[in-house]
Length: 222
Image (cartoon, rainbow, N blue to C red):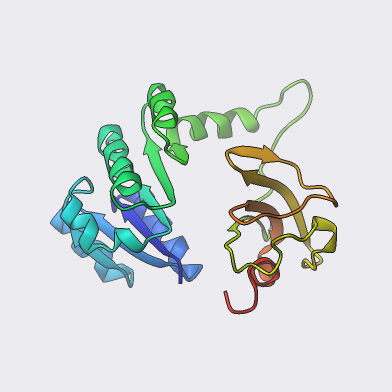
């Protein structure tokens, strides 16, 4: 089971933990406020570690060394940046994700090797812009309209599709590969595209067939 460490049990961290638990991830939360930590434990079946997300011992106790993903979701940009740096440099977590409150800090976060950035301010602005007409075209998100979701799957060295071209994949009927992230570069998958170890594959898939997609790319024992 893939482990995710979340720093910050506020609204963002809480709802992320809830979603990840439903997707059968192993989730641990680091929260500095005792009252908030207690409230989360009463609602979610997770282990909450009371302490600072920038404290190495607290992160060690939470199991950061064995985590695949590390998400810093506090309301403080500096704390989120430092926490992700510790996760990457000290605990060697493969994927560090940081929440950014001030969009002006995004450039710094990207320069310091944060794998992904969640800018709630930018997302809110983008959402508002997308529902406003532009040149007669109204852009709307499809995910809230049905059961289609965006899936991201990292291919490990035991994936049965390593070395195979996309055209040979046996994917669910209602599934579409849309992008491959490899060595920091995004490419559009073609029939002749060969999948490599370490690729992060993005696909649109019906929620009911998400498990089938996972098995197709990672094997039946993943």
